[in-house]
Length: 257
Image 1 (cartoon, rainbow, N blue to C red):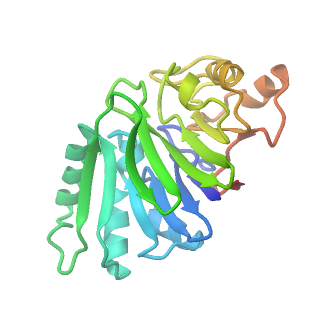
Image 2: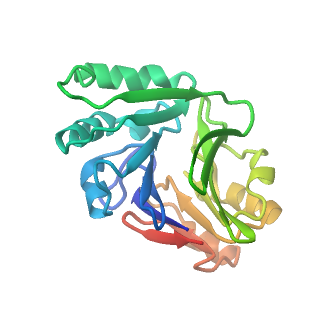
């Protein structure tokens, strides 16, 4: 069982009611926590979600753009001040490790006294690749299509006779690989930077609906949203109903089982 908490749901330009997109995945009932990207005030948000300094098992950075990485130095410093001792793996696509290391070095974090070990592990982006297992949890990554190396990811858990999986598109244009990877997914979290029209190297709501029709996920959640776009109008046009189809809000929490 997973609990997903959306710390931010906006696009590269944050808004009064939408911070940049990043979210927490908790593997229940163990409360093992995995943070996907790292926006503003990450430690405060983790504490509100009941995550202690040793509960965070890994950080997954989808790519090196500023809106997905700028909270990283604050997170590392906060974990250190809160007394973390265990190593922290940071998974990222090849190329983003330089951005991550640069942010850590800028604030001299690796040289802090009694700093826990930070292990940056860059991932190949050719196919679905397993990055870690933790008890009944398995996490894989796959290449997204965003103009720079970017990784989507899938959280799997085997529960009795079925597999629960949460698929995250990451920032991407329409990605044909998801037609297979997200087929019959328990939950598909997909970016939707534009409603009617994709903006830049991103997806529109039309792209998401096209993928839904091919993959038939149990639930779809939109993130990386642009203020003022007519998402609700298109939900009516396509006859999309809650809770099968959700437009995420900051602070929203979902249980996936």
